[in-house]
Length: 96
Image (cartoon, rainbow, N blue to C red):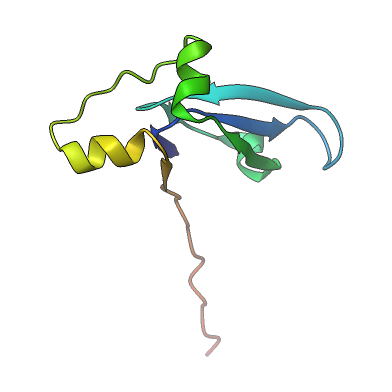
């Protein structure tokens, strides 16, 4: 799962092998993207972050107004990505 804050970005996820076609979607401020099943191992990247003015001119959500002015100012020029991953481990069983 990834949480996107700040400037919108183009999120790219592969449909097949690396170098083959991919799906591109916009991740905007506050969007959550969840990858499961086969998508978890698919190639994925953020090849481009859109600046505030470009996003606004393309009618993308960028009129956020956080109560913290320094944070608001920062997020209008940057993107923060928070990724959460579930990792499972296999217990090693000792032979007796």
